[in-house]
Image (cartoon, rainbow, N blue to C red):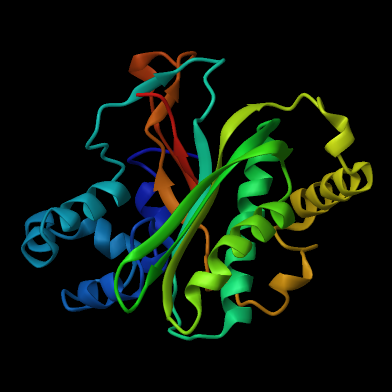
Length: 262
């Protein structure tokens, strides 16, 4: 969807604060102190008031919903590929329930796999991290001898790394993603599982047509949509095919963290 000053306010009207990138429950609660409860109210708020309450972070949140890019825009070339693709989420619920942890990590992993397949890529590296309520973060990067495209594979490898560490600790955030990306080549097919590739393709077709998680892995069963939801955000990269004078803010459900060459 292409937004401009003429339709941006209407698009944001009535939307919950946590639909925006960078706003979770704690930040939303602080914004409530200023009487800001929806994204259109955040858009119309005086930025100096936000800066007094939240510091520079407040100004960044205001700029995001107003479509103001604080960093220079970059022009993407048609051949440019992301260096990594991943997702992160700060948990809304404080619990030591491992099944809940698995469900959240599975949602992030499947979203990552979907992004990889949509771009026609495969990955040979994985990163995963957890933030602990007791303090500190733990993370690990691993390189692989085979390629990944499936959310279930990404989840299994990530959980294998994290499960022993978490133990009795309380997780408060998760991040998982892939790197060493390349165009899908089907090389090294002795590693491949053709039936699973067909399952991925069938799931993608159904979820594209009927909505995300119409068909999903059992680990996600009954996980409410409020956990690891999509976010609204603005991308910094614009197409070289768009004249500079015609550039418009592009927005949507910003689902991924895509790190590209600087």
